[in-house]
Length: 203
Image (cartoon, rainbow, N blue to C red):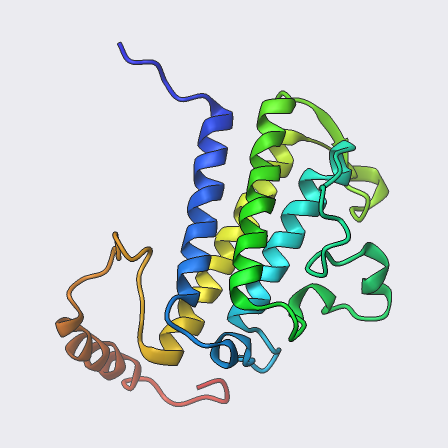
């Protein structure tokens, strides 16, 4: 009988996969393309990366009394920045290049992964920005919370990148999609179904 993977290893693996899914959506794009807002609320591919990096720093850092070594790095958004700019962790300064931010996120990932070596999954922490009544949480709870957040943003990145140049899929090695040749007929089929219903304000 083979040994089952430890829960901490599973969490590490799926966090890593979420980062990979997000970061490869930047591949082949220039600085302007990754920074341009792609939704009415201003979401950009590079903004997603900055946000996710700061999410990991916050949840796996002060929540458990841990300090990220590069707290003065320009990509680290201080907590008081949100008082004047709620979108502070989505706005990538021009002086931070895509390559620099990707490398920075790699170091954040190592900081996150180290938490699973330093602490048991039932270690208790306190999330400073959560309501007082539920601010205490275990490392396991926090990891699942961050995992859900990162995969949600990976989905956002999927859609943004497809809208830029049609690139789609889970990862370059495993796109997890049918052959591209079938997409036009599929789109035509679901469009025909939708058009059987009357138009409304949302459509």
